[in-house]
Image 1 (tube, helix red, strand yellow):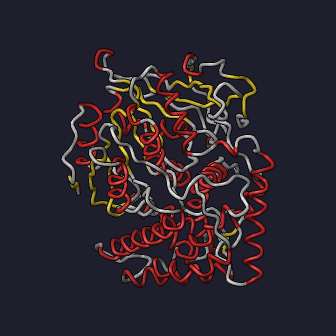
Image 2 (tube, rainbow, N blue to C red):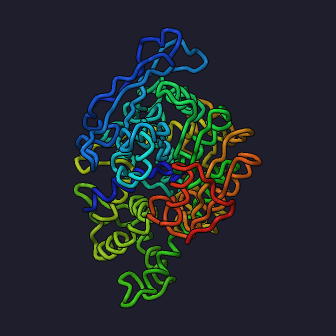
Image 3 (tube, one colour):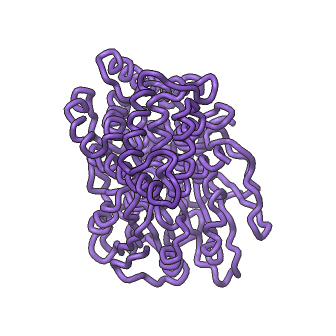
Length: 514
């Protein structure tokens, strides 16, 4: 069962929809010696593929302009840049402002790893209207994701079973079943995606971004990274410090942590978000429908999950809401304060024996659409994380760490601890204990941390600033809730980010928005 590690901002849009093709393979051609010389053929965008999340083609922009899509050829193996290629799927919205005011392209990565930028950027297009006045807005499916040689593991029916499993085993039989399911999933990835698995590291994606910069005709990479996108941006800055233009990191991954430390930090982060939700619900005028005090809210949730471990309730037929699905759904609802109302409604229904809303939230986290088809966000997430992260944790090791994780979060601790076994037996060795983001000489990078962020805890922003090196990272604090800051619509945050990206005005280090 995948952990909540480095989740994707794209899942927020998927949840809102739930609640209110063929995968591209590795090309057999070559880059003919110079991949930077290729010309992009921009066309109106098709509907997203199943791997990108499905749905309809993106609607026109508010001014009537169409979203445009193209394919960029990149080396499959960056150590052999003239060898076989893969297709990198791209999307853009041309600038709405006059050409003489255009700065260049602003490249987005919305996180994951595993999130499709091609399907996500149009969903957030209106949020970035101010930035479009001086930039072409550009995003992409990173390698291994969506249409960019998307990693394929199990089929939809197998994934349904995989996500129904007990991901917090309590005895030897449950532990054996859990580990067998993990091995089967990983073996399916190796069988169905053998060529791409060795080449989906974040360093590979960063090299793709520098190729994209050149193919787009930009001297510098102007960049907006969210969640895992901040790690990708930091790795890019380390590899290409002189190519960094105006860059913003929002919802910041802590680059100083191992994957174990990151999981433990997330346990504490999601617990903090749950504490904040419980406090908010019980502090409002009128009765909180899921508890009469913050502690009572959390106690009732814990009791619900304990009951579901033994007796699942009806979810979305024919599936039942299990303890695992409910935990996943609760975590998904904590990504944004806007989703707290769905959590309240989902809990009310679950207490009455109806698990549909919590299951919809869980499905969104896992990339499952209403028609039962899965995007490849989870296979890509596992493949990229396992290619990046050197540690391989065993079940016996996890067992020894459970008390520490439970202390960080009585609700999410077991769930996140057991997620650490995902990479056991993975076909590709992990690259490093931690990403290297040291970027001496890079242009200033605005690093935005949210004090209430469950998925990338606030402390990571300061550590990213320190790791980037003197004179590079500039920290901005948002005292808010949810994952990330810019899309919270906070005027102070948006003004600071826009002033930097549009006018080059760097805010004072240590600026606080609330």
